[in-house]
Length: 374
Ligand code: SF4
Image (cartoon, rainbow, N blue to C red; front, top):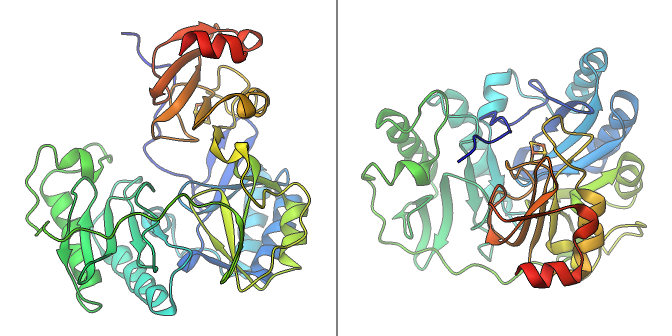
């Protein structure tokens, strides 16, 4: 088997610690409690135009990232973000503050998240990809979002569940954060971290978890689709990308935005905004994932997004077009996955990026070749 042609970084970019990419630095902004105010969004949009290339991306961990930042513009960008109260005190704390909240979180959940941020800042040194999910809304919605330690609702109240276990331990509002941190410490002390990397589900294949796992979380909510809801509007963007001008336009129409891990924004209490290009209902592009690809990513072997846009109406189920075998846009399995190689795209079914398959040039990928290869 050939060694993969991509590099696994083992950490996610932040604002204080950006990541180099083909189009400059990627600067990731991690909102507190999943929320940005309209003022913060306006400031981010202006900073994206002034200090980056104006591209704003919604990430799979419910963060927002700016692209095309240069070494020279990074400092002024940080000054702008600091003025908006969007920076952590140092890169280590920023790197550890990987907490995804349900966009339907309550004010009490937000308080719990703030407690968790403080505990994480003082807690053990966790791997860069290690994360927490607070999935305490009226429906469980973060089951497929990457996280290692989860706080969810079970039949009798809140539970603490390690990723990879079907059930968790009963906790209360007062014990939730201390117990979550006890689990994080156990992960580190029992050898879950190797060379700065490690994830809970993989570790549990080797180590026995010293926590109760008998309490099942409530079932996952049905598929989440953008549209008007009783409690606000849910709006999506093709590939999770929008221009800073659109972000600014949106910020002028709403009071608050809650980030989601589904390339959608939840606008609490709002009616659907007027935003050309946004996805506001069922759409084949909602099931299509494509990473930056060439030329934006230095590891990319092919262009991805034009191909994904062309194929969206041809594929039933989830389509993932990946610029290399790493699969940044969609780490999970897709119904159809096209992984870029130097010769074209390896086509596989029900697989993750990097799966082997018949290699086709982009021009050869049509409804007929897709059907023949499946
Ligand atoms: S999957 Fe896409 S974005 Fe990620 S490293 Fe490969 S080409 Fe770059």
